[in-house]
Image (tube, rainbow, N blue to C red):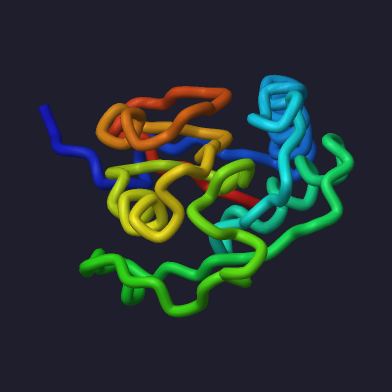
Length: 152
């Protein structure tokens, strides 16, 4: 029995699939905000969360969109996650009514750092791996921890 490299158990996602899955996540989030079902803003975790956040913001008719940038990888080596760009604090506050969107939660380390900055935000991802599932409030598809997702 041989040991697989991370990319050998791959899940290839097309632009069409990413779009469908982001819309499915938007439908799950529709009417779930704390202010009579509405959300105040969307914050994308860059870079992977930008395309899904744009689709979700459009589907839910949310006009306020910002980003938070977290760096945890240096090439393919994972380091301690740290925020290198924050969203507008006057809009975001403690995160109440804010949707934080990313493409994937893997180990949950990135989202753990984001949660400290916006503790009351609703964190949603399209794909989730078991080690990170507890860090998100909503997701569309769970994949095994040893699956490497190839995004478009």
